[in-house]
Image (cartoon, rainbow, N blue to C red; front, side, top):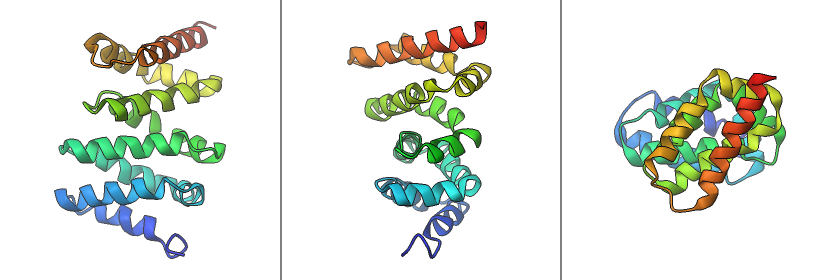
Length: 169
């Protein structure tokens, strides 16, 4: 019901206030909505407004808000509905995932890397990642060596290889 009444638009408008506590609460509300596929579909319907608001959260100085915003965009990209992820990618989600890969919270970073990896099945998306220089962010994460799970480095290697193959063909 609240989705039909425009809660996502209200949350997005609240992010425009720029007040740190409100931004943190908005990040938590957006993240909570990404637990439900119908909610994610509603967020995708208002993709420009939703994405703009989530970018505000990811660009915030507060580490917690940035981390939750990164997880939120990852949840949307990892959504089972192909439409949700495609719409957000077309609106610039790769840039946000690139920032999210570098957040200090290793779980959020891993989630962003997994979202990038899940997008590798589309040659259009691979080309987009190549042109946006997503590889630079991924290599930066790999060079820092903060992750303890080997699969993070495997994902990074596979993403970099698939982007290289796409750009060379």
